[in-house]
Length: 417
Image 1: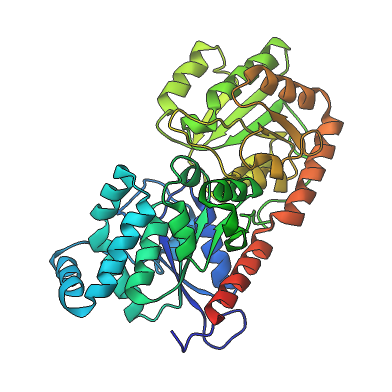
Image 2: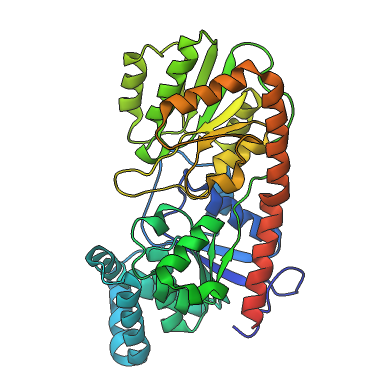
């Protein structure tokens, strides 16, 4: 570890191992684009997924990252490695890692079972990152990636940080305190999340939790006048899952139809609710107005936004307790100069200022969503002004390149310490 003094202009790049549950995931662009931004800043990032995962669709940029992904399979060699570590090479370190497994699981049977199922892979990955001389581990998500990073620290001595996003934090924060205490520092993407973490882990940990926001690539999303001709165009870029609240957006579209507003709504994204939502659209008589685009690349999303009048994301807390962090798709829509219609939930009000860069509505209130859309459809001048304000907000606080540089500097400082 001593020979790696950390990128950002130094001769030897800082080597950072990213622990993630799965890679690539088309709905987790923030991990991919942050890693690519760090690479451009001279940080040597490699990704270590904990779970085997393949998707039919992937962002083209994921191919660029593929050569920097190490997938460790569990076989006889890996099982022998665990036994050797536990019995002969580092039994004390192994016992420390086991203690961290239980502490970071916070007494949750589900957490413990999943962690034990990953034990062999965590030990094997830890051996790999030590052998290859990584300086630091950063885990995306406060669940098992953060737990794995803590265990890797016990086994290797390599320090770690982790980022808490949304549902990974809100659904079951048991074990959070142990993960924070074991880290060099913990990261989260909103002030809302930071307050949540302090509430559940202890206010005395305030100096150990930092807010580093996700961001939009401003080179990909340009501001300007959008959707000038034709019907009022609504873009919604989100996985077709309950937490995204699509059915309440459909309620809002009914308000537009009743007001005789010509409109088109494009749903970019895929997921388990697609068939149900398609049937719902037909049952509501909205088939002529709603298009299902499926999974879209970033360039395809940028083209969609350039032809739209508003970005909509009507998120809710779902039955399993899942909540948003701050959706990157909202940042990208606002970066493209669009006003936002979004839910007043989690960290979203930190991005969308109600009445300034868009309209915030109570989660699950289809009538309020419809009224917000109606206001924008009837007042294009106000919509353009809100879109301009939204782009200024993203430039000021949600620029991917700037925020990645801030994060990289914090990692460098931590490695140096």
